[in-house]
Image (cartoon, rainbow, N blue to C red; front, side, top):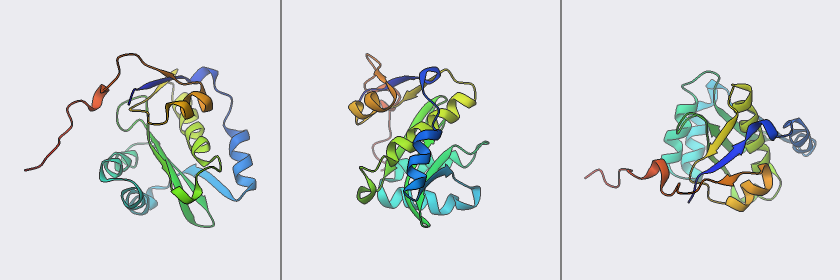
Length: 159
């Protein structure tokens, strides 16, 4: 999967998208430090341990670099930034039964806006799976020659 580049200075403010979700009862907000155990466990349960490891890093920095989507106290999704590498968006995910409601886009724009507010002009979406989604949602473009990117030397076995 290729990396993608996003021009943060061209993005519209996230507020309008987040308001639409809020009217549907879905709140997208920065996770609280007191929620670390719940968020990291949720990510591991719904996705995989590698993402849980990256998510845990989001709670070790200030400002905290993880956004969550919550509806009536139930976690629906998450998005991290600045955890895999500086200026990187991800990992991110939405539980399958909540997909198609704009939650992934809301999490994406909230995290990208945070990167902009922290002084970045560009963001990298590392190992972007749904490239067409990122292109439509935020105008991301594929970075040529970025496969396998920073993930090329991953540990494959602990034996």
